[in-house]
Every structure is written in C-alpha cells, then in structure tokens.
Amino acid sequence: MEIRIGLRNTSREISFESKQTPTEIEKSVELALNSELKQLKLVDDKGRIFIVPVDALAYVEIGAEEARRVGFIA
Image (cartoon, rainbow, N blue to C red):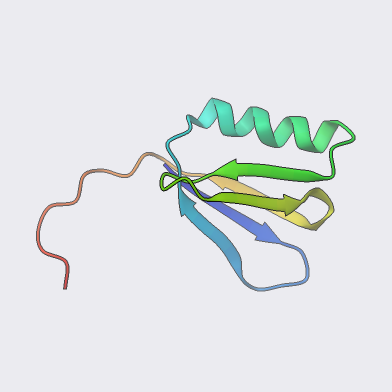
C-alpha cells in the first residue's frame, strides 16, 4: 500500500510502501491528530520508521495496494 505524506511549507512529500492496512494507518493518523502526541510514526515495508511532527502535516494520502508488477525493470 502506498502512503504519501505532504508537509507544510515545502513542495516535496514523503512517499513509501507499507504493509499496514488502510485502517491501521488511518487510526495512527487520527490518534496523532486528536491527542497530545507531537509526532506521527509509520513503518514502511522494509522496516524503516518515518517520524513526522504532527504540526508539519499538510495531508496523508492512503493509496490502494500496489498490484504485482509484470515485466522487466530497466
């Protein structure tokens, strides 16, 4: 599943694949926004941890699961 996080005051975004379900990601984002937590913590499919300050969040886009790719990678 592809996750894209937009940050305030920058044109770049954080984009990564995650094994978490859309519901798990949505709950993590909701918890970070509605509580006194100061950071959102998500894990990608390679085990890397992304920690983003809640006050820097512009948006979090939760994409559909990536379909299996067929063919060669150039």
